Image 1 (cartoon, one colour):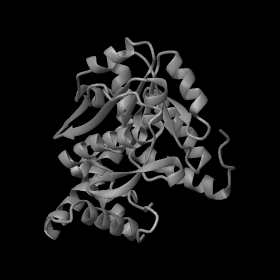
Image 2 (cartoon, helix red, strand yellow):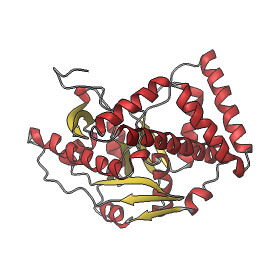
Image 3 (tube, one colour):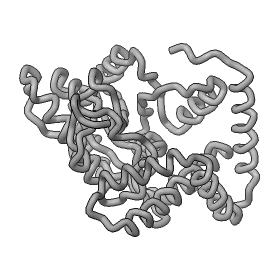
Image 4 (cartoon, helix red, strand yellow):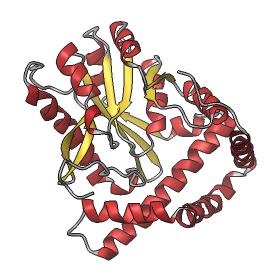
Length: 304
């Protein structure tokens, strides 16, 4: 799809982006820890709005938790994403995935291999959790095939070009979200893997309401529709950190009745997929992207 037009603002942002990547590329490894702390400081102070949003999201998700517990979790969220950004930026700058692959463990890749044996293609779904950017990298490393990732282009075309180039070097073949259905179906017909993240807010016409941490939230239905209408195998995959180790957990293929004629089936299956995401977030709450306004869209009649 066409990218936004270039502008002075885009060029200035790109110059800042390139300078930051160049700096990180030259940093010795021993300096990464202090650099991460500086980054976390600026994340906290640079966007008070996101700080308030994280606090509000945590209060909504964990209403019975002590305020001190939620405050500690908030600090761990900043620490996780500061470290994640530094790791991505380091790999981006040096184009060297050795350090990531050497400390990665993939569990139960056989679930995905069995799904591919059906020759219908496979939908892999996940969430903005752990480090979702490494999922195509690890799957390609284990399976020897590229992963087709659904993405929205960035507003800055210069940065988008660099980021797309990086993602494709990591094993993704990018399919831009708008008007993507035909391309997705082609890739699935060729028995390829399509990778989607399904945990962000959407408008009601593009999703259904589900329970997420006991509160209503909208969820996209693309995965559910392809499963129910086309009988495409669906495999949940989540990546998280355990200390210094990166763990990619491939879960069993979704088993749900094919009832595309039942209007309730779409909501039921989307709820099941959302429950899988919530299960992972509850295990490692500091590793989910709480910066997003997940509960923004409300059911008709609810207070915003």
